[in-house]
Structure formats: structure tokens, C-alpha cells
Image: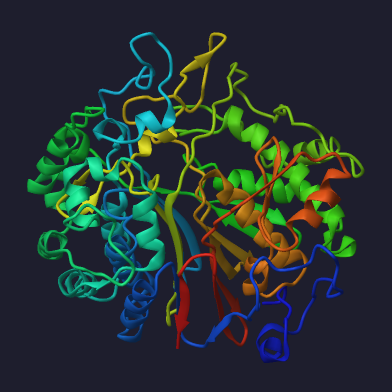
Length: 579
């Protein structure tokens, strides 16, 4: 990959290639310290690779690839194993977005497996009897927050389109782990302990807690015979039982909780469709950065950040405060547009000019290099529909995962998958958790008489921040990347892209550096040894700062002329594996 530069002699032979290269800024600066001690280079492979959020999931994907499977085959195995070993983050009770590169056709497509609102849902869905919006954490637990899951049908669709191995073979690794069990990780145990109200739901209490009611401890063996039975049904019959059969009936029944009773119906499940969409791509210097369009705001907002930054020679500025300031200001401007305009375009008209270079140049002109703006106003991109809109409010999101796969045939997938909050709605059936994705809609349908683009509507898909990304150079993929993290996914991915593309950082080194995020307000700085120094340097430019834990879960694979380079965010427990 021409844009990647080595962080040590070990990677030099892989990362340097003939052709134009970016400026190399390798001089240390005060802010150029890692958030994670003992930074290490990325993992290398030649034939295929998986980077995923849990070792067992990565191993399942690698084994499928070693048996001649495609990236789609491995994705099914990885996702179903994640459902078992990382249930707080993703599973078949949730939704996902995927970018898929078909090497045979040199074709990039994006796949929308986002959850949908029940047909009975309307704009007042999250208003109480007094017409006031519910509190977010009051709305999460229970069946009312559950949208129609899309992940399983997405996996089935990807396998049908791109799979090389039998469906039963790619489901088998998850069945084995569900039956044999696995040791609960420290992260999973801590997640259970920190999940308020999880124990109030009988299915979750029986699965995630000991008989005396304490959270499962690290190292405990967790088996799921119920999920194994579900997987055996899926292995033999595909998604049919889930969307139109016995599992569908159980899902609907499970949403009729005493707390926040749901309105999901069998017809909603039967009507669900995965949508193949055109990816949203942004030209950035010599690259084309492609991601998922609406109902995800990921590609548009990441694209706007990069498009604004394209007005500066970042590599000439170096990795210090100046570049960080520009990144944060660009983020404010992009998030202002995101809040006002972005939503499911099957229901809402959006400006087509959000990534227009001239528009982004006018946005960049609003940035002062010497002083931070308090917050940014939305811009006026070129578009045909000048309807008035009101901005929606952000909702927290923690139950998400990302993985990337490159197979031996040249096919590739970058996929972000979620059940929204940690442990989703807390409602469990047939061995899996159901999402709380409907809380990703705006709880307020309008402001001052103007509709909020992301308000609830029957059949609509809530706006997401998930940003599975594939970067192309000369029409060929050179980088797969993505992360969990709610709306902070966008700055996590954009900051990593800036580090890798503009500054030539090894992907692992880019991941290990401290996070800085701004969603059009105060700047959040990742807690760590250099946090106070970072805060002071940014405060001198007028930034309001907070120091906090910023727990991303970035995974990436770089494709170079000499092989594959994988990286997994060491803030979590993921790994990259390949051969």
C-alpha cells in the first residue's frame, strides 16, 4: 500500500512500494504519544486474514478461509461466534452494515441489514402520556425498543451471493462453541456487572448470572444449548424459522414485556428485506474512501471530515496540535450537518451535495487555525428540496462490533454489526438477545413545527453512525477499517484514516494513539498519560475539553503489494489472524 509507511524495520519490506508516497513525518512531538503502552506493529499475512473482536471469532473465520471459504463464508462464521462470545455487542437479534469487494468483478457494493421499525410505530412512539420524550435509559429495557433484526438475513444474503462453502459448514463453528462452551472473558464479565436492569429480565438473568444472582465471573465456562438448537434450525432451514416460523413467533412473544411492552408483529418480521445499496465514496487526496450511506451517517460524516481536511497539507503540519485542532473543527462542522439532514433516505429527502468539494471548501473556510469555534451551525449544501428540518439529539450506543476479512480469492468484507446498547433491550429468546435499535430514532418528532429527519416512522430504519470503510487506490482496495463506539465511531474511523493515510502510520500504531473526538460541542480526550498535556494544548486554542475513557474497537486490514497487514484495537480483546 503506497500510503502506509513502516514503523519499524520488520514492516519495511511490506509497506514500502514503488510509486508516489506521502510525506513522512516521523519526528516525535509532545502529542504524538500512544494511549496504550508498548506499541507493537500490526500482524502480517500473505494469503488471507481476519481481524475481529474476539480470538474465538477470529479463529473461526481463519479456519473457514483455510478450508477454501470466501470472505462471505468467514463473515457468517465470525458473526455467529461473536453472538456467543460477545453477546453484549452483536448477534442475530440485531442489525449490520457491510461493504463487500467482489474481486472477480472488481466491484464494491454495500449491504444494509439495519433493523426496521414496526409498521405500528409512528412519530409519537417515544413520547409519554404528557407528550414529553422518554428518558433514553428508561426506554431501552423491554420490548418497545426492539426493531426487526436484520443481521441473520444479511449473513444469508452475503453467503448466497458470494459463498463458496455449504451453509451448514459455515454455521458449524458457532454450534460447536455454543455446545462446548467457552471461558467468560474479563471484558464480558465486567459488561454483565455494569449492565443495569439486565438481571430484571428472566432469560438474561438465567444466562448471564450465577444461581446466587452474581454476574458470571471471568473464566467461568458459559454454554448455550438453547442457542445451539437455534443454530441447528438455521443451519438446516436458513433464516425462514427466524422471520416466518417458530423463532419469529418467539421473538414477537418476547417483546410483550411487562416493562415497555413492544408492538412488533409477525408481519413486520416476514416483510423484512436486506437492501443492496451503492456505497458512498469520497475522493481524498489520491484515495477513494468508501462507506455505508443512509440510513447510516457514517460514510457521509467521515467523508465530510476528510473533505474539509483536504484543504490543508496535514502531512506538512505534522501530528501535533495544529492538525488535531483542524480535525476537531472539521468534526464539528460535519456533525452539524449530520444532525440536521441525515436519516433513512427511503423516507426522507437529503441534500445530494453533502460531499460536494466546493461546498466543503466553503465549510473549511469557517475554520480559524488559531481559535476553536464553540459549535458549528449546519451548512446549506446544494439540493433540490429546501424543506425545513430540525436537528435530532444523540443517543448513546455501546453494543457494537466490527470485523474485516480478506480471503485468498481477493474478496473482502468490512462489516459493522450491533444490538445498539450493551445487551440491547435485555430481552432474550432462543439463546440470543434482541436489539434496542428503535432508541436510535429521535425521541422528539419535531421542533418548532419542523420535522426531525430521524423521527420514528413505521418500516423506517433508524439513523446509524456505523462506518464500515474500504479505501481504494487506483480502483483497488488498500485498506479495510471500522469500529464500534456509537456516534464516536465516526471520529474514531476518521482519525485513524488521517493517521494512516496522511501520516503513513502503521495501522496498529494509529489505533494505539490517544483518541480525540468532537461531536459539535466539547472535545473529548482519551484518558492516559498525555491527556492533561493534550488538554492544555487544545485549551490554548479555545477548546472546551473533557478527559474520559474512549473505548473504541477498531479493526483494520491493509492490502499491500507484498501481503496483508492486520490490526486489532488493544482497548478490547480482538485480534488479527491470517496465513
